[in-house]
Amino acid sequence: MRLHTHGTYKSIAALLGLAVLFSCQTNPVEMEALSKELNEPTVSTTDIEWFYTKNGKASFKLNSPEMFRFDGEEAYLEFPKGIELESYESEGDKDAYLRSDYAIQHLKDNLIEAKGNVLLQNVKGEKLETEYLIWDEAKELIYTEEFVKITKNGQVIMGEGFESDIYFSEYTLKKSRGIINLDHAE
Image (tube, rainbow, N blue to C red):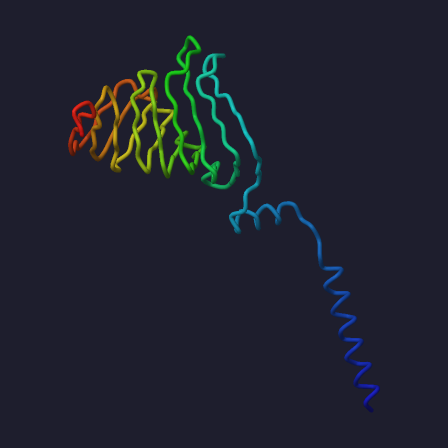
């Protein structure tokens, strides 16, 4: 009787194994849906350098050590190791520089959210430092509601909220907290 029971268990296990083996299929549509459900990137790459053009001329150059693309209703690119973004004037001269520790580019809205040790610098040598900044390519604006520190002409200006053109040449500080003259500071 024992051999018969043991043999029955083996038969059941073999049938289950065959059922699992023959039920496995790779359906690309289902795999893509599962990937989106798990929020896995559809593309990943390293050491990227992209040039964005406007009317046939380079307008931006983006560098990043790593990038992931996520598709779905709100497709985006994630730069977990940060970005360096340079903008160029119509003549081809560099006019602004942006660096951050982390960034997300929302493809639908043409927005780049830069986070962590964000540095924005223009051709005049003026620097803006903050922890969060949005670069809106469609509206040609750069802005934040966070704390900012602007260094220019021997002064440090601190405040909350900032808005600028994409070249960081004309800007507004919303809530100024104070100005420090570096030439007279001890």
